[in-house]
Figure 1 (tube, rainbow, N blue to C red):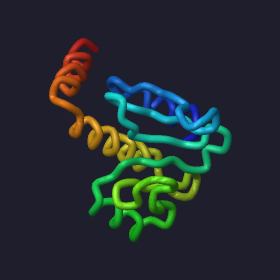
Figure 2 (cartoon, rainbow, N blue to C red):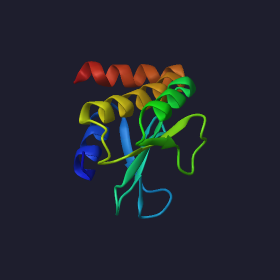
Figure 3 (spheres, helix red, strand yellow):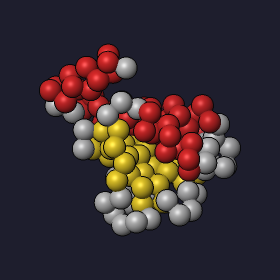
Figure 4 (cartoon, rainbow, N blue to C red):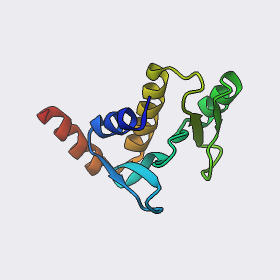
Length: 121
């Protein structure tokens, strides 16, 4: 996955916005105003995703290219090293999982709004 594929996939998820709130080098993807993925825009060596805590540990133990979230809560975030063995399908699955975790925690009104937007597609 390259930076363009990463960006396109993240933006394909309903209600996703992109921002650079931490400076011009850090690209952040949000849904409902909450972060679900981020990466260094200049290097794209890795990206961070939110993860179920049990799954986060399992992923780190199973894959050497999955590490505790860099500059994130290590219990809930993983860093995926790009180009180190993760398949495109895995990367998309982990991005989708992160997105779904954030959506599930959003207020009901926001979730309903997102669901309506999906129906209109």
